[in-house]
Figure 1 (cartoon, rainbow, N blue to C red):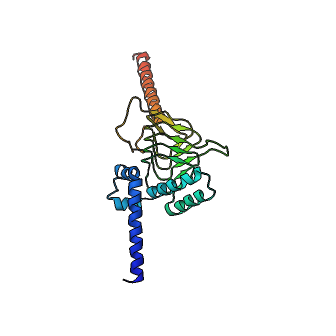
Figure 2: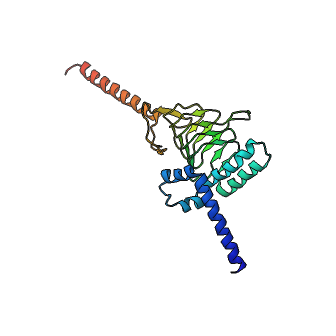
Figure 3: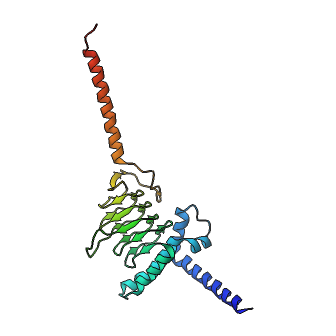
Length: 239
C-alpha cells in the first residue's frame, strides 16, 4: 500500500474515532439535531456538516480551560471555531445540554451568557451586552427557550423557561416563563396557562399585541362612527 493510501487510512480512522467520541459525548446535542431539524437525515451527516454542533464541541473543549484560568488558548480555540463555523461563542459562556444551533451563521454568545438545557438558537442571534460594564452583563436563557433568527437579547436579563423570542425581536427586559416576545423593542404577548409538550420552534407566526390593540381600537372607532351616523339620522327633521 502506498504512503498516500496509508495516510488516507489513518485520517479516515481518526475521523471515525472522533465521530464516535462526539456521538457519545454529545448525545443530547446530536439528538436535538434530529428532533428540531427536519433536514437531519442520518448521524454521519449531522456529525460532519452541522456547524452548530461543531461550535458546541469546540466550546466544550475551551470552557474548562477558561475556568481554570489558562490564558489565550481558550479564546484561540473559539477563534478557530468562529473561522470554521461562522459562530462566535466566548469560552466563558455557560451552555447546558441539548442546545441546538440551527445554521448559526452570524450568531454571537457573550462571555457571561448562560444557556439552560434544550435552548434553540437560529442564525443571526446575538446574546450580547449593552455597554462596558463588568460582571454579569449578558442574558440568561432558561431551559427550552427558542430565539428566532436575527433576534437580539441584550444585557443581564433573564428569559424564562419555555419562552419564544420572535425573529428580529430586540429584547432588553426580563421575560417571564411561557411567554412570547415580538417587535422592536420586544413586547411580551403572554401565553397564559399554556404549556407546550416538547419545544415549540415556530418563531415567525407569533401574536403581535400592539397590532391586536390597534385593531380593537379601530373596531371601536368604527362602531362609534356608525352609532353617531344612526343618531344623526334619527335627529334629522322629517320632510
